[in-house]
Image (tube, rainbow, N blue to C red; front, side, top):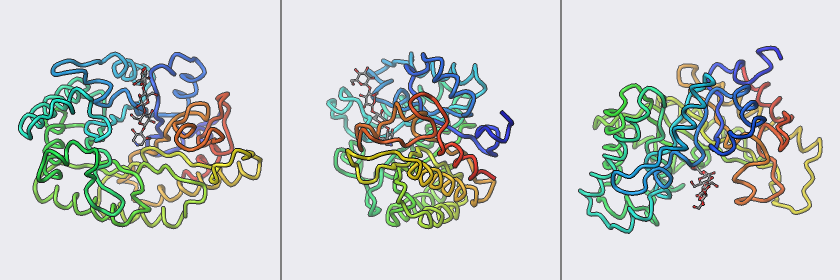
Length: 326
Ligand code: G3I
């Protein structure tokens, strides 16, 4: 197929997908991935809960395998994610560390993980989902909020630890509903301003973009433009678009639905293309094909959110994504 018919070649930025180590064992999966995508994100194997089994006890198997696959196939790796309230391992939470010990262990974790993949993983979501949609700091079930009087300063120091471990890696803050929730976006902007003035390194922000076909595209376009005003790199980091918006058991993925779906992808890619070229980093879909998406459990079994179907055939959404590229 001609270069401009393949998303990883037509795009002037990385086109990524969240992947799992086990799925790479399927030849169809691996071939589809390396043909169409230029970047991978570990869906869960590079999170604390998976890597960090105890003090100085790390499980590198799956993360190493994903990094090797990327190296072998001329792909980049986006590191997801170093500090996320949902991914602190139970052994760590149960230790009830005081703030000094908490930070000492997390510092060592960040230095160890980022140091191991120095020069191999080009970017990291250092912190993920620290704000609520209203702009307040997440507090429920958040070990960082429970431990620190000034959680944002703690996160800022985590960015410093990551920068020291790999000065070349681009450091991101990642969250969801960024273009939809003005409060959250405002909190992110003020954190970026504070980081800049207090010398905490931040290179980019990621909007996960777990959206629906009905999500207002003007809101998305305006929100992306607003985020771009920070001057930071912008990553659409976990794009999937729900089409079964009513979570209906009788949903039929008809040609009409597929065409609506393709248009949604086209318009979101166009909205991303509208930001300054120097601030583009990647558009990453959260998964490769409809046969393996977190939305089956979280949203509805009859959901077809991605660019490939469960037989690794390109869908109209793939054409939509391609047509949205400049
Ligand atoms: O595969 C292991 C299995 O071997 C083990 O026995 C089992 C018991 O713990 O865990 C299995 O791993 C699960 C993994 O998904 C693979 O299915 C983890 O428990 C489960 O927590 C993990 O869920 C992931 C979730 O993040 C939490 O890490 C989802 O796959 C992943 O799609 C989801 O992704 C998040 C982003 O990181 C942040 N944004 C939201 C997004 C969706 O929730």
